Length: 154
View 1 (tube, helix red, strand yellow):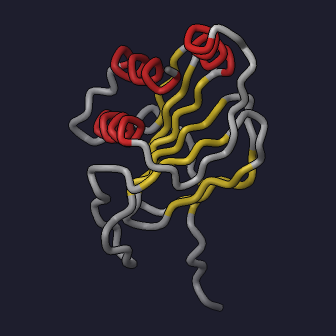
View 2 (cartoon, one colour; view 1 turned 180 degrees about the vertical axis):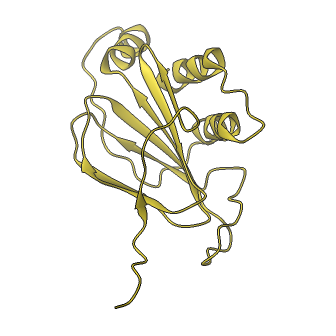
């Protein structure tokens, strides 16, 4: 019987998961992992750091995200990344996003839509900063993470 090469399932730990009152930030990689189909009430911004050379051995991913994804509240999705890549996922509460929308648009008539592979230099830069918080020499500063959440919603 051949050995299974299916990726493991990501689980939250103190090293890969920061929880704040209106947001959560999670990190995965550089070992490939998978999350089965799921959904949540939060709006998800995923920053994907892809290694320039994906191989069987984990390598360091790029310091700058290759792309980001936006997943609306309640939309079923699967999480997955390959060996050598990393992902930083920020879950923003609907309340936080609605408050920012009200401040910016002076109305609450907005809708979050999926945006896979979108390019936005501000969001990608925020992803780089968040990723560094999860590296071995990162601080995991909740105030910095909270400030980035504020920037992402505005």
